[in-house]
Amino acid sequence: MTVQPGKGSLLNTLLSVWVLLFFTGMIFHFRAVSSISTGLLLITGLICYQKKTVSLLFRSPFSPFLISCFLYYLYTVINLLVKDNTAVIQSQFEMKSALLLVPVAISCIGFVGAKQLRRLMKYFVLILLTASLYCLLIAVNTWIRTGDDNIFFYHALVSPLNQHAVFFSFLLFFSLIYILEYGTGIDFFRINKWDSILAVFFSILLILLASKLILFCCLLYLFYYFLKNKSGKMKKGWLLLIMTFLLLIAFTKNPVSNRFREIVQTNWASLDREQFDEADYLNGLQFRYLQWKLVPRILNEKHAWVTGLGEERGKAALQDQFKQRHLYSGQPGTADQGYLIYNTHNQLLQSLLTGGLAAVLLFLMICGSLLYLILKGKKTLVTVTVLSLLLFSVTESCFETQYGLLFFTFLPVFSVVLTNQLPGKQIHSRTTTDPLPAIE
Image 1: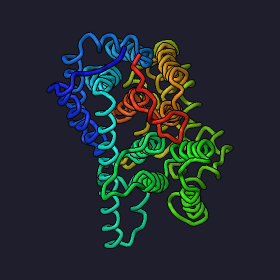
Image 2: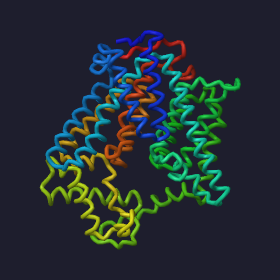
Image 3: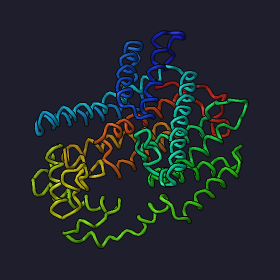
Image 4: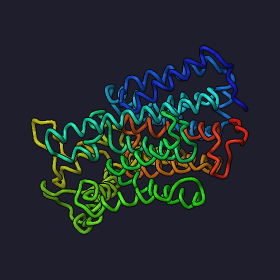
């Protein structure tokens, strides 16, 4: 099915406005704006393209993903109604609704057409650039006043937006891939090197944000990109600059290198004991390894392998295990709860704890539908985005926060919409003279 909305349509214009609002809300972490724009985008898309929307949902490459998300959401709602109290049901129902609403709403973006979609992506990159520069200006101002250079790294750098370093890194990484694969079309002040400037700038920000997962994925992608385009227009100095900056970070003492040294120096033997001391510190790998030991033990004790414990009981059971092992539990009477605030930090494990094997099968169905997107499209943007998200679900319980759900449901569908509408750069396998593909 070829999507060709009527030019000059008021509803089509509104659709583009809602998309820009969605981008702004997501990048600047305005939750209300993200939620409202999602609803407006969905309603406008359904009104504007009723028959095409239904056809798109069942005939598009991301149809299996939409169906899998719907089934997971349906099971979650049923499990909540059976096992949890009213307050938990309401909060989880609202949060998990993103599994259903966001991917359907984002699929409507495909109706704006290739020309408008490229313009929207230009604005996406500019909004992200604005947010990044704002964070850097705040960091410079704080550094001048306090002399604390930690403000330039990890969560501290994006704290003015109340953002999470890993989520913001995802946005930067997604934009970096888009810039290198498709180009932004930005030509302010008649400078034709904006794409290279933005790519370098976003790469440096990714290093400062120090997300181990995103940096790993980014390095693999950049290595692949330069192998694929070794005879293209991109200068070898671009790669040399990034590698020099990486080496500088790696061989000096700073918050970024400290995070990686901490992982390399992991003491696995210390986790074989049953009791800890409250002063014991667990790094990310140690804490996740411990979770894989605790969750099966909980399910065995509660005889809950099939349908899990539900949200509230699952959280309480995990906290009890932390307390029994004397892990740090915070300071009574304060907001500090230590390890008690954490979930399993793995979406498959979290699904097993709260929804049992039934939820695990449904989550694996979602993962399989994402892999299907890779096989179906064979586009670099889709492949790298999907694989990064699947790795993200291994390190985080991405369905347990509104923002995690937003990213997991937005990025795969949006990457498919982009690659189905836009031709790649001329230096790649496709040229700018290739005909625009239809959304099938």
